Length: 231
Ligand SMILES: [Zn+2]
Image (tube, rainbow, N blue to C red):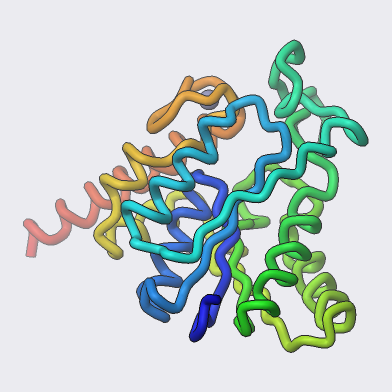
């Protein structure tokens, strides 16, 4: 299976991982890219349907799979997996109460196991430490350390590719425009913690980040257009 696969993309169905997938496909070609989506009890299971649409329909990825991690809510609690809890960021808290402890660590490990079985040496992730929610396992320091640990664990020269580590959301929107996938990201991704696709609820921490970044991107683009017409 998967002969020639060069990279596995961790695909959630949100803006970041969809843009990462687009970059990876551009670099290696869809036939050489695999994508993996985890369902870990997140309240909006719809997210994984968006991931499927992105992988299969939008980018033509043959090697896509959804892996259930149904045990997650048994060992940790958070607002993303609980239907009752409201999503918020308490004053002074490092990150919103949507943090799923160790999620990216688990995802990167499992994606690497699959990558090794496919013969792929890259694992792509859309995580970022700039302009994001402050989840500890999204930081560059963690990603580098975990890459090293995973190489040792699997005895496989896997490389973690995190193209947005130091990019803001506005940079990411600009990149989506450059890749020609602005409409796809706007309409066919799900970032909102309340499970509302596209522009989302507009109120949760994920929507606030996404929409603020979009407004900044439009502002910069507007400024550039003004400058161009002045020349
Ligand atoms: Zn929202």
